[in-house]
Image 1: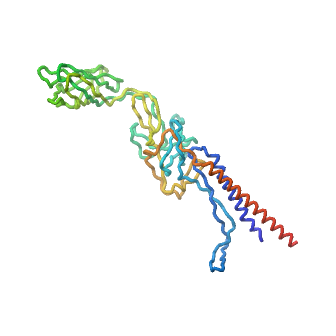
Image 2: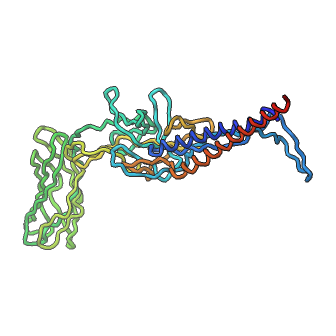
Image 3: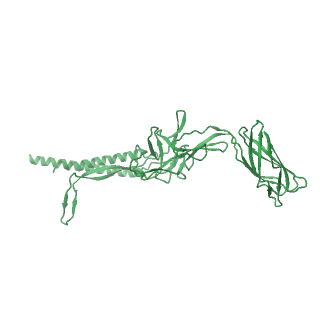
Length: 403
């Protein structure tokens, strides 16, 4: 019997200590957003020199000099946590795809990946950025001119939506209305429109029936804050009450401040029926000035700003990264991961439908499992310690016999 007999017990105690560290790490992070459970796994340690041991059955086993056990940690990256609503503006959760990660930048050229979507706004160098709870810059594809079209390359998401926006000039309008077929010879319909300098004005379409013509009307236009010019002067309907000419009116607006604009008015769905003048629907594509009322993500991962005039300006779309072998991502801290040579290629995933706004992904720790694992690890450590004590007693006995 040699001192080598202590190695299995000592290695077992060391391995169980590391396993207990994992259990403790999991328990302390049971409420940490985006945390992935860590497991400690074990493997057999073989001796430095091989052996060839035979048996009566003729079977042989090589390298049978097992000298103990060692451990390694594995993070269960591919297990998704439960999604829970928070109501916070910038919180987002990924749901339905375990190989999808938010991409973060530390400002010094280093990138990290996480499932923790507890983001916030941070003012830095006079600008507002979307950052992680640890202050890293969230990566996204910048919106082009506030439209829902995005750049091809991700960058730090800058929250640059203005508090107020100017009115949007009207360029198109449509009127669905009914002119009376009889008894009424004059009808007026108004469209509320906008220009670069006027935050709302009425464009009035005045229909006067041509004397002696049942299905023909003279058309004139007025503008509350200027004049309106249209080349079409007459509107004609067929005997079924459907409009014949014109279907669209090209109107030039000369505003009182000297500016001008053009509006196309669609009247193709106007009718001439019955005895009543009736408005069915009037629409136009302009908007009044507005102030910021809300900001947040949608389920496609787009961060946008919404205004009191029903305008929505896109800011950025989250950059969601996937990997050929995501299970090989290396833990950097409790919720951050970094790439290794074994993760394969990084690529971007279209987040449409997998983003849950105002929600977070919970920790994947199961407390009952951790307590069960703690009991098992504690018992294994105790048995290894007992084995070490027995070996010590046997060595002491041999020493006493020699003396």
